[in-house]
Amino acid sequence: MRVRLTFLCVAWFLAAMPARAQSLPDKPIQLAGGQVTVSGEVVGAIAPRDDRSFFDYTDYEHNALRLFRVSFTGSWHPSDRFAVLAEIRSEDLEVPIAYALYVRVRPWKDRAFDVQAGRIPPVFGAFGRRAYAYDNPLIGYPLAYQYLTSLRPDALPATADDLLAVRAHGWRAVFPVGNPASAPGVPVMSVYRWDTGVEGHLQSSAFDIAASVTTGTLSDPRIDDDNGGRQVAARVAWHPIVGLIVGASAARGDWVSDAVKGQLPQALQNRSYPQTALGMDAEYSRGYFVVRGELIASRWTLPALDAPVLAGPVRATGAYLEGQYRLTPRFFAAARVDHLGFSRITGTRFGGAPTPWDAPVSRVEAGGGVYLQRNVIGRVVVQRNWREAGAGSPETFVSGQLSYWF
Amino acid sequence: MRRRWLSIPTLAVLGAVTLLGAAPARRSVAGAIVGSVDVHLPPPPAATRPDVGTLGMPAPHGTPDRRRSVVYLDPAPRAAFDTRDEPHARMDQRNESFVPHVLAIVAGTTVDFPNDDRTYHNVFSLSKTKSFDLGRYAAGRSRSVRFDRPGIVRVFCDIHSHMSAFILVFAHRYFCVTDEAGRYRLDNVPPGTYNLMVWNEAFPTASRRVTVPETGGDVQVEFTLK
Image (cartoon, rainbow over all chains, first blue to last red; front, side, top):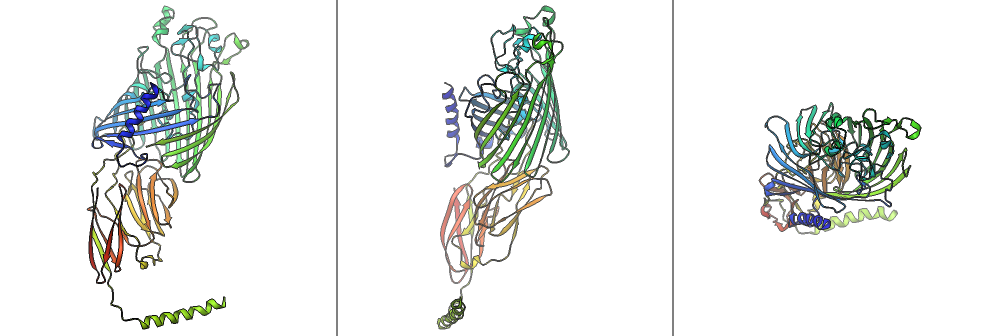
């Protein structure tokens, strides 16, 4: 079924190609007199061995270093002030999902102010809006956007010990309150799916300002509402000179589902348990190099249930610095240094010493790529991961990727 | 070594004898090949890749004129290859498009790529004829590339995927780019029979056999591409 749907998408794309085209297209396909534009991307990444330590898994099933992805992006813009955009993607030949599906409206013709509603791109941070392979210099994701912490919106630890017990087990966390089944935790900010809601964006020559109200949170974007809460997020980006972008972001929204809240003591059920995050990002490019960095600090408020209690919210801080350098017209080199740290909590485990609630992770990823054609890019990376606890540390992976877009 | 020095005056004398012995040739007059290329191609709207990651309407950008064609002789008269100057040409980056979209130059030409926009551009080409990458540079700056080999060079911007252009590099001077109405004119073509070729990015190359008479004058050749 999955395979069939994916191949139906590919067949549709091939049928839409102009009849005279003798090779794969290198520019988007236009239909309906230019009102409809369709582009696509096919990305295949292979790694000689699996990541049994779950450093690169984006959930329990998908490894970013071993991923086959087909996506089609379409826009319908009947006028200069209205457009409908969608991205349909399938990972590892699974059922295609609507990664993005929203309307974009420009209410005033002479003002660069736009409203987008639907399954929308995140306004927080910088990496979440980048195209997967086209604008990612490497193959892996930054840890803050990918690494699975042990927190779950549908299951909660009752004590500090419950949380300490699943350190470095974000790929199959189990907690006593809420859903008893083991399931993957959430990253600090998810880029595997986008949130649903409304956002506004104002652009001037030096600033980009965006704000959104959405159903889920950074770590748990949603289509359906599971707690009646809303996330408010905003980002201000400053372009002081050409080539330099400096951004600041903030977000806050309820992240614990009502299903779990229903199992809490009555006095704790009506409280708010938000995820609150602040972010800073910067990009500078000139000549043949691009350097980007990002810092995300997030905290999740959890109910204090039993002793040893979780005193206050738990925090995570992710930071990365990446760079890309074009060596020749065809070859480029890239590297990323990345770290994800966690605040300390105190339980009876680890001798009662304050301990990070999840195991801090560090990563260095470096590699290079070649433009086989303008729109066919090959990459090879080596990635080394360190984790304070859990299986497989340090762990080194090698991955190769071939991507094609039109 | 000695034989080579001796052979040069010998050849010169032989040439002089030949010329003197020939009948007085009728003086030939260079002609012109003129006409138009009618391209049946609907003017395409700006073909930007849809980017679901942007937070607002993309800025409007220029639309390349895909109806421009290049008309040239193949092979060209021998005299066409006698060039010693080093010409310059220009391809602007303006309103997120390359202007002109099609540029025809003679080999040895240096092309300037000034950035007239307020954003970065990164001009590059992976073509076998000429591979280059100018890096990112801002408004008011320009970088140059010299094209020494004949062939077709596809030019792109690494930042704006909708930006593309063509540079056709010729070993001779008998070429021209059609104007907005599709008209062309090749002047000073010596009498003779040639293949007149038409290149357009959207169609296979078309050709006609054309003869410029000894008396010169204009030879009209019309093309229709569809």
